[in-house]
Every structure is written in C-alpha cells, then in structure tokens.
Image (cartoon, rainbow, N blue to C red; front, side, top):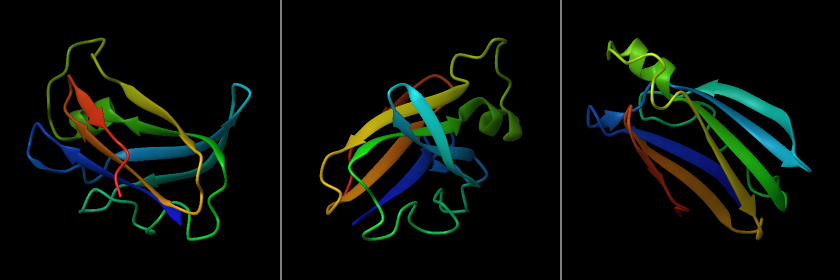
Length: 117
C-alpha cells in the first residue's frame, strides 16, 4: 500500500523540519538512489508517501537521514566527529500490499525506529 516516514526531534520535542533524507533501493550490497527530499514542517516528505499504493515492491530499502546536518542547522554545538552523522536505516518489505511506515525518533546522541502503521 505504500511507504512513508516521519522524523521527530526528541531533543527539541518537535518534528525534524528541514532534515535532508535520501531513499534507496538495495540489492546485493548495491544501493540505487530513488529520491532526495527535505522534511516539511510536520517532519514528513513534502510530496506525501515515498511510494504510492501499488508502487512499492518486495525487496530491501535504505533511508539515510542527515542527523548531524539537521542539528547543526538548529544551532546545536556538536563535537567533532559527532556521534551520529548520517543515519542509515536498512529495512525489508516482505508484503508490499501492506503500508510500511518508518518513523524515526532522533537526538544528536540516540535514535529509535520501528515499523509503524
């Protein structure tokens, strides 16, 4: 039914508006860029779902979140090298007829994710 993501900044208690994100398909260790986007004011893709209903295929994917860039942009002073830089989440889609939502809760020092609905 599709793929979506949503990022919440747990340091500031708000959506991660302005964070840069990349979506890739992966196969045999090779990643192919599908799209780049910047999260909107709600911490979501400005174009809606990353894959619309019927377009998501069975396989493996990667979302890459520019965590350090986002927090630096927010004025957070980070050590060099920073603890989290570009965060890659690799995940599989076994049932493309279902919706896959990949939320990310993130601070400069920690993150959590899960398969949402």
